[in-house]
Image 1 (cartoon, rainbow, N blue to C red):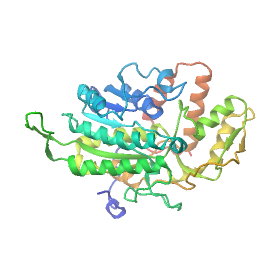
Image 2: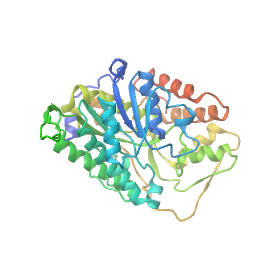
Image 3: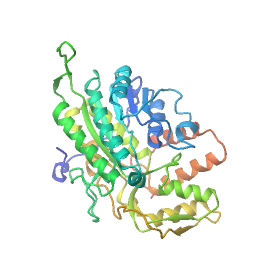
Image 4: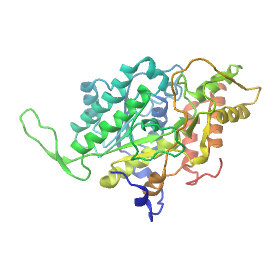
Length: 391
């Protein structure tokens, strides 16, 4: 059960520094490592010295951060589909991980309208397969299942959502992620009681071996931005593509507000959560929000205007008045639990997050070494104070 507001009273904020010694040589299994967020996670884990195995389909876009930043260097990359339980189980057992981070997903709202069956198969059954494969893999200690801020039943109200608010979802993507949260909660309650000794699944001869149950948590982030995202129908990639081509960007919902954050913010939260699950499973095997400060929950129009100012050279926007599928108008996350119980808090204000994103895009345009650029941004982030006052 999650921590409510009263349970947070009196808790001090602890240091949220990621422990390099913990990750050095640690066996980690990451699904979705070829995606945008997965590529940032992969490079960060490599920089920490983890023994990393990734499992994913080929990159969904061309160009991709995975290819341009040579993410495959320094890790073991397995091409596979989370919709295949047998293949996933085989890869997981072979990797012998201590930490599992599940990021593989169909991550786009508008794509979910076009491919709802595939969206549910990947986001729901993919999560089922991952958790079931973990049951058959000795040695796993902590599991972080990444979902989304859109897993909540969106009531279009001004208050940010807390971890114990109801799951929901108007569109197939959001509903599938709400389902993934329910699946994870069911597997945790049924098979992964924290800090409890459980029986491993019976072998062919009916024998079982007692082992420590993995600690399993879910992580919900806001609207993530950063260098290397070429996903279609996402605001910041659309803005950058339009500005680079010298044309105005068409925006669909200028007044829609979102919890904008640089990719390094939630990815750092996932790493910190995995550490805490490893060391104190009973206290952390639950759901967690990793969003921006309230001041960075801003409308689409504000993001476009700020990026146009950063880009310069006549960058501008026009309103796309076409017929579009439903998307939420108001969305924000309450991060009080992560702040007080994990010691995690955002380090980048929105202006700096947008600036880093534009800097990365300009480096790409200049043909610079994008692996070096991405790793440099990760290292710089690690040396920022716990709260960056830039907004």
